[in-house]
Length: 263
Image (cartoon, rainbow, N blue to C red; front, top):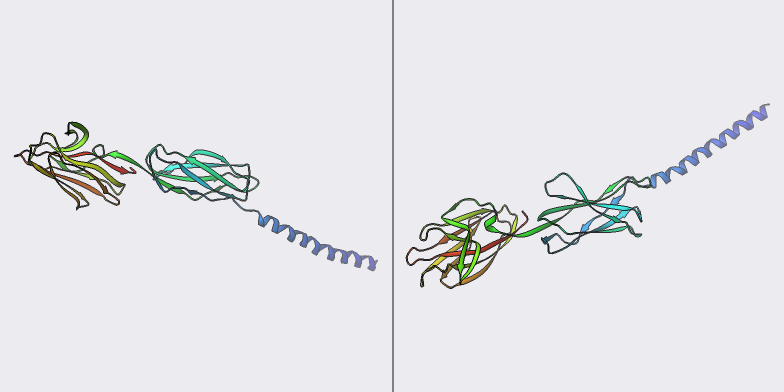
């Protein structure tokens, strides 16, 4: 009887460690399974003009989930809600590609989402952004302080009418206008000239200041046409001053000024 008891006890001692070993061997399999998908994302451009390019968002999903779907989400800068704007299938090598043609100017933010599958939790890429610019007529943007100036008038130069141009109401009097840019614009394009009603031999002057610093100081005579471009990067405020004479009558004009802005 003692011999039988001894054998049973010994068997129990042997079986115990084997069970522990089996449990310990299974643990690494669970530990190796990723808790969530990792999704990368990058864009092909950082800025573009509205209607003049395509945004491409590409990246990779790990662990690979070939044939599964990923979703492109988008929102405007400063907004909290994300909207699904695209769906794509993950390729065999784990990569994906989205294309987007922005329909509005401003900063567009993108992220890519892989939903939970195969026991792996949902994964979301870092946010990537593209600034979309639009050329806008300066006259149609909100203006600040102004005096004796028409900013949505039609100037006649060389017999050609130019709408949304700047010119003084009363010649010989101070004439200016300010526009807040808030650092949202990069470029200005326009033409400086004299209205056809200006007297022969008369002259005028136009100055452009950014944040109080003069960047353009243009003297004009009748018949002169001066195309101009100005870098607005970082500028908070733009100001035009138009200097005219009552006799001989001069009539300076800023023809259809346009600015390239994100908002």
